Image 1 (cartoon, rainbow, N blue to C red):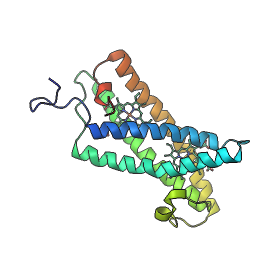
Image 2 (cartoon, protein in one colour):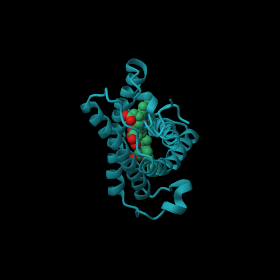
Image 3 (cartoon, rainbow, N blue to C red):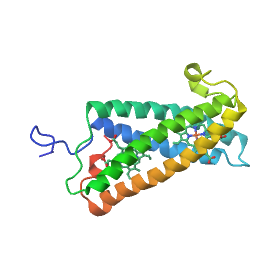
Image 4 (cartoon, protein in one colour):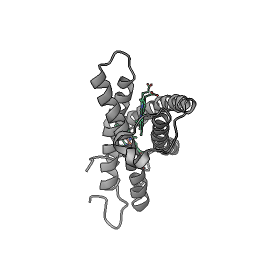
Length: 184
Ligand code: HEM
Ligand code: HEM
């Protein structure tokens, strides 16, 4: 039995949901360090430019992946959690998942506003995104502060989420981790 017969609910997220999840993980876990490093003083100009280029180009890709995931989620809803999981943990997990989606979208919006209000290019995304916001230094500063705050919220959410996933996968081995594994 692989759990996918007509008589028992599937035990895993769909293949596309898993693939999109782990692709998002790779992009998010490279975009965060790129952002943290690129704002440091004393970087060589070529390194700083490369990190900014990566950061600004990947941001909208993350947004597209989130939107695609939400569509996939509608088409094939998540499998039920193991019955052994306490209700409170299931509620917290669900709240963290939705906050992850919301904070990622808010990071892309605040980042785009920060860049355009500062009068900078959105690189490969300019043909689609340019002109959304005019140059406005005060707006650029507020968007920058919001972006910085959101990144701390995201890092805390990821620590909570990945910590819980690792606990389920390595210690409890109750089937929660394998809902999202393997990636394809
Ligand atoms: C289109 C999307 C994005 C754009 C245009 C963008 C742009 C920027 C810019 C310009 C900065 C430099 C800070 C400043 O000068 O105000 C920055 C910082 C940062 N961004 Fe983004 N960003 C985007 C999406 C994201 C996403 C999705 C994440 C997380 C996955 C992220 C995480 C960070 C981090 C961690 C920093 C460093 C903040 C700090 O410590 O000061 N950004 N971003
Ligand atoms: C780095 C950024 C990450 C983001 C943005 C993220 C986001 C998400 C989201 C939104 C869901 C819910 C999917 C849905 O129902 O729509 C989810 C599920 C899951 N994630 Fe992540 N994740 C990240 C990292 C990780 C890591 C590092 C691990 C493993 C250590 C992991 C393991 C899992 C597992 C096992 C599930 C299914 C568990 C459940 O349904 O409660 N995730 N993730």
